Picture (cartoon, protein in one colour):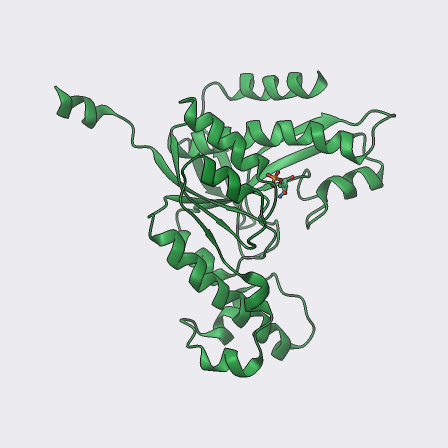
Length: 276
Ligand code: GRF
């Protein structure tokens, strides 16, 4: 009997969550997992700084957590870097990456080397817990093609990010501020797969919220965050259920298609929620 039940149970998706700050998205996922609302298990949390409040949330939930001292890695001297035997061909990696914009190639190579050194430690920590997918949730660091190649294959992308704007509008670190400063009348949030660019990967889900005349940035952030929590959890459910298909457009771009029969009603719920 037991064996049959085990065989028919859907395997839970093993998630690694990367954070830098308060970790309210992490908390929203923890809450859903604990309530049994998400076919996933958060197996590891990692932060790029020791004072990320989200680490306390992980601790409280009994989730193994790690700090990768990015500031330390990014401050490494060229000599120390040269002594580290990085597991990559930096020149080849530099040709693939689209995140570092410094005009001098030598500088980009150094920046890449520092990031790879940090990512080497990050991957080692995550791999102790064998995640199926990695969710960036307010992780304020660029990830290189070295990191991505551990999780993405030609067919499957396994690194997700939540972005606080309606991509491709307002990529970068200040989605809410940029949306507000532009004078947008609708703002949005996006979950996308991570590729070699900054916030350029295939979009999985988006939700929009109205911006009212009396709003300020704090008000739209509050509204947007509530949607972030909903859409991130939904994307993880779709991933767990195998309902995310990737197709190629004629222009060669990867495009996500969701095969959930309740898709329209989910979209309607998000819109209703944001209109209040
Ligand atoms: C969120 O707005 C997320 O979209 C962005 O960083 C913020 C993280 O917030 N990438 P929290 O740490 O989850 O509270």
